[in-house]
Length: 279
Image (cartoon, rainbow, N blue to C red):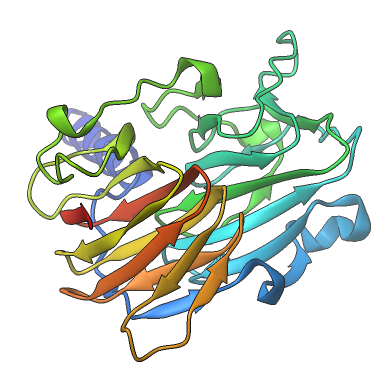
């Protein structure tokens, strides 16, 4: 009897641990750019066809067991049935108004620049109310699946909804990896700043910014949330205009040369440090 209980306890512990979201990313990023107008679109939930939101690939493959980043477009008035996901995902609203919560919760419409986290196994609905609605989703494992609420489970993580107006922005005086004269601001979203641990932040570039972002880790991925940047990996490269929904990845020790004519917000997901400097 005791032996059976022991094995049951081990099984429960192993199951619980496996449900936790990974905190590192072993896939090395490369120098690459995907502009918003070159995103390849399909259906987020192919089983529902055109009743599903559209999904556009930025990096990785959400149908496989690997990290991935992708865009999702929702029609005005969209509201999903209650459901769960097998993995945790994190999202940032790029445009429109989105709601993500328990089916009985009062609508909390998140505007552009807002952030939310949906834990694996947590029952919820997703709805959209803007004329055009698009968000960026980040997963650390896959595949990304939609499952019935009858399969709900608790993986120990909590849902988060942060309106854009509630983000806390820190300036260069508070952050060692941003040069003091850059006027760049940062908002922390998720992850750990311990060595080799995944983390994500938003950086806000002031209008007229000209500078560089140097990647110091094995994995660096950036998505333009608002505004617009001009991007190059080298002065010899052609300049690429990156509008909201565009993505660039960088290999370790690579430098991105960027400029922004207007205030721009970029989501940066890295497996370690990076450095922002300005001219």
